[in-house]
Length: 380
Ligand SMILES: Nc1ncnc2c1ncn2[C@@H]1O[C@H](COP(=O)(O)OP(=O)(O)O)[C@@H](O)[C@H]1O
Ligand SMILES: [Mg+2]
View 1 (tube, rainbow, N blue to C red):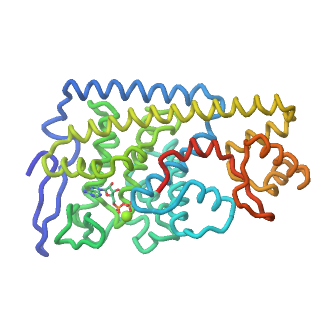
View 2 (view 1 turned 180 degrees about the horizontal axis):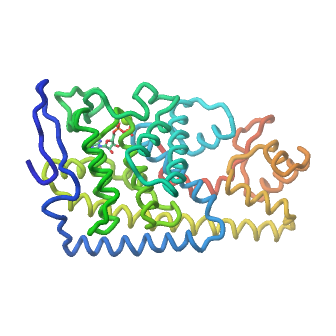
View 3 (view 1 turned 90 degrees about the vertical axis):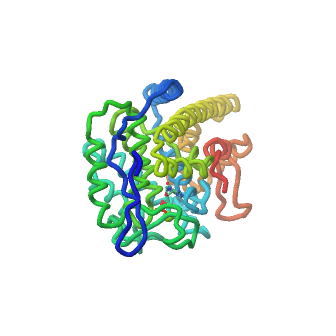
């Protein structure tokens, strides 16, 4: 028994961890270094959030970040897909790793759905189940009871490991609903602790309850974004932690375990706050790069006298759809195939677009420089 919970022997012989409800008791000790990290995290997140306010059109960047987050969060769990695969799939181009990509596409849907829902609906067990249902529907997770809590014991460990050799055994099914109801209460409480800290605790607690048969890692990471938006810490959903967790995956797991084993919430909170700082700063950096790129390319078009409203329109369009075919452009801008091809050829000459199929027919073009900025960290 420690402050985070206790291992309790189950009738069938194994021990399962029953977490203590949040908040921790004795309370979180906010020492000097935690306060320092918290203040840095607030500043970094504030800067990013201001960017969200000031930019007239951040929606395309958010849409890209949503895809990137979906990809990275799924990659942490072994999904094999790239950002290019997602764009190809969205353009209905045949791809090899359909199952992996569908998993990411479900994640995108789940994230967008949740963001919309929390605008008018409180965060709740019901919403979490709803999101889980979307995440696991109609693809690889289908047999893992989408939208339902576990009905059999689950455990965490290396692939193929048995319950006996598990590194962590979460609460049994019979305890799951209670533990989740406690977490729901905690979500709604007015807290003495700063929101970024309660957010760290909520992610830890969710991973520890592990209420679903599968998808717990991904849902737990979605909760971070939902919670911060729901609590209006961010006006626009620009902050995502999966890249940080992917970079420090083993440490991420070890630190979650350390809370369970030693009741040491503080080291987990510090790790989490460092993630907020790092992710806010890198999101801000990417946004700056993207804005600079838009500026450079617009100036280039003007200099080369290819600055008709349609040419500028195409450039804007590429920020929302960085993979295109001539057909896409012809259709979107309601022009002939030939006119669209001429425009694309100009963009290729200026190295704004690159042809990616190497084929004569069915050519596709990539807004490669933009994708280079966005895809940072998504390589397998
Ligand atoms: N000690 C641990 N080792 C591995 N994963 C852990 C550990 N503790 C918690 N986890 C969490 O469990 C998640 C994996 O659970 P799982 O239900 O398979 O989720 P998903 O299907 O989204 O991968 C990890 O992403 C991580 O968040
Ligand atoms: Mg899994």
